[in-house]
Image (tube, rainbow, N blue to C red):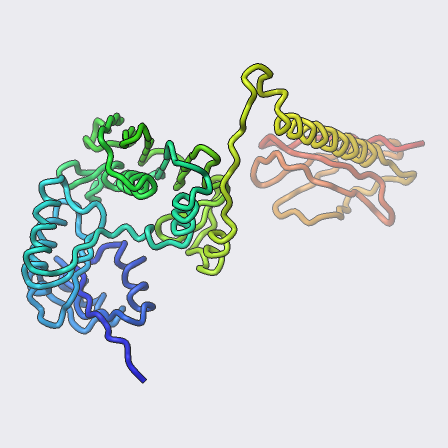
Length: 414
């Protein structure tokens, strides 16, 4: 039986992305091995070597680059160090997987490509999304003409990033900012879908006055053939990781989107943890393009069959919702007005147990009972209470919205 040859990987630095994504992937790959780790802090490099099973830990990046046992280098260093250490590794005959973005500018990227060609090694930018099953399905739908010729692409990657002065993403000199960090995903994806390079670009950004990095950026790319892509990135917006490719016959995708590191999202809510590959493949398999709404120019959108059908559905839903609210209201009125023929008891409470809830009977007589509800914390939650002795005497929905509690009086039937 033949054995799979494993590639010996060396990692430059103890970056979070290496710990969360790259190292687990190598350990599960079956064709990769962790040969060496190097960090500015030798103690941390040694700790990683013990935790993850690296063959050796180096005290400097140069020691790792010169290690003859290392065949390929993963470079997750800050953006301003991508070109320098990737080129050093390639000059030492190592293949390089460099984290995105490849470098700080086009000149540095050209130098990196030249080094790879000169020394006969592979150089790759770390855009893992290109290997995702949903992306493969999207490209299949686009290239087979399922949505017609693609005229526009809208790609977004935004999230709220807490300010941290020690993180290089808050330093313009080190390649910080939303455009470099996550906007590169949106731009790369647009180029992949349209299978071309842009002929013109227009961009705008909101710059953080305290740090000088772009907090939110939007880029409009013009591609040959009158096609366009709108790409946006942000450190200060609600999370979104999405793509919409619009063609002459439809748009894709619809519904669930995938985070570049494997988490699945839908309608703005995230499911924590990596999405199971089986589930991701199922989503990709059942992906369908959306139909575009075609409206007759003389009749308007309201006469379109699709609009009429949706309007009927909304009317039915509204009627059902109103009926449900009416039934609930009747039930609440009936519950709150229920009384019993019995002398009220002062020291009994039963019903759903609520922690830190106190009931004080202020006054009781054969005709009425007055009591106060207090909770440990002020709340607007409604409590269903039953005051009873041997049999119930009063029940209903009560709430407390003030620190001093709320007082209620329940009258008894004669």
